[in-house]
Length: 220
Image 1 (tube, one colour):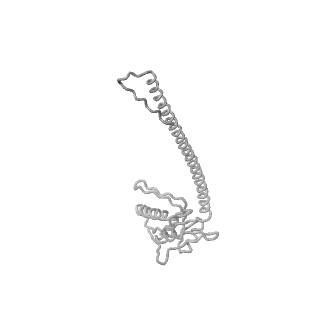
Image 2 (cartoon, helix red, strand yellow; image 1 turned 135 degrees about the horizontal axis):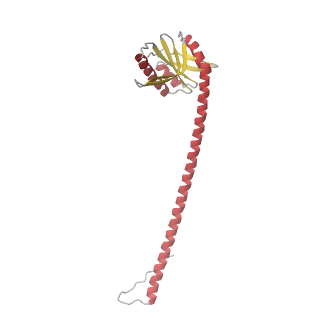
């Protein structure tokens, strides 16, 4: 609707009733138009807010679904880890001694889940498999799918164990190994490069790969 033309009132000419009435009508129409526009703006704002709320609810539902899937994945990974731990306990640990014997190691003792704690010197380490005899120790770290960070952490573990051994007058040579179910070639090479033995599945058993050629076994 077009705006009603304003009524010009001459201050020197006393307004007649008709002029006053015309001014009031024009003002009323303008107020009605502004009110309708305000209502339209409010309706548009309400629609936008509803859309925002809808999208927020959808985002919350997606977040809840992602959280559920992550929990389910964590559960399955946990179950896989437990099964892998059972496999290690019943297959790897008993056979490691004989496998290393083929590499001229005669370990007299084998232990699983060993914890080294020296609160006085701030030393703490967890060891998956600990093989030892009178002059050598083999520290085996086990991962379902080893990564390069696991190799780096094992290096730190070996350095900590060397420090712990020196403090406790244990001057045996320490060597390390990393065992895994799924071993990427790059990670295997990375482990060998840093002087670790690599334990990999082979049929119904496993093989131990020794650093050789340009790679050398490291002792701590």
